[in-house]
Length: 300
Image 1 (tube, rainbow, N blue to C red):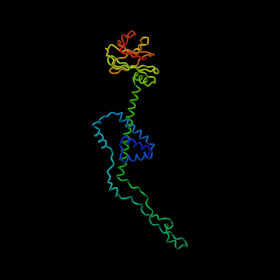
Image 2: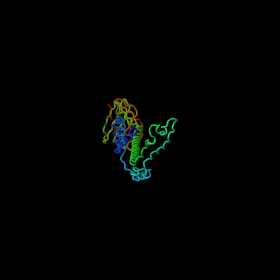
Image 3: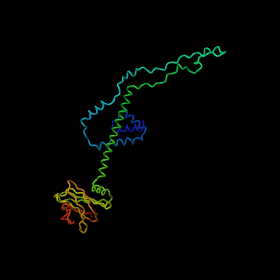
Image 4: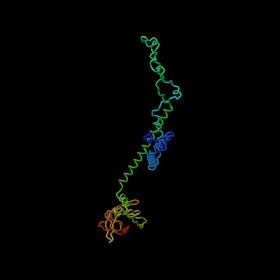
């Protein structure tokens, strides 16, 4: 068994779909080539990933009828009578050679008249064995080979489907990762930084607000949940409040159902307080907070 044939059986082993005969062949090949265990590990891991990533789904109601119709239209081997094959007339042996005429006597040799060409040549051509002809395979052998080839083809198809599903799932995951919102990407970057810091405060209505920042990244992200409801003509505005009390506008965001994640515009300084106020739609008209902040998170 070569490595390609083993890989086909390995896919069936990972899916627990080998016949007893193929399972024995698989185990024997693995014992002979232990370095092929990497193929088995990869197939088992792929099958496991498929099981974990694909949600349960009921098969379509037409699945059984579709399979039966395809089986009915597939070319089938003709029925053969094993007993008839066993008693079939054997291949005829080669016909015997015609007799060889006597050798004419040589002058002066009276006894040469009884000699023949056959006497002068080694062996007897008329008694040589007929050429060996391999007997035709039995019905059982033909059917066994057909079943094995069909099973391996099915296992290869199943393994290909597993790979396609896993690759498709990976492509979706990569696409989601690449197309993350900027605030989500910034939060992940901050949390991965060695100097990442966070501070959380509780809101009067029972919600929470957490500021995340890292000096090495140079970004600040606010994650809030349970902010108070505001009217349609109002917005939330972010502020950096310096140690001397000077407010610096850091962007506007709209209310959202559930948690809100926003990235602050501008640069935070040491000792700043992260604040949120309720302002007219679009932000404060004069660059100053219109009222007391509903969120104030010290960072020092």
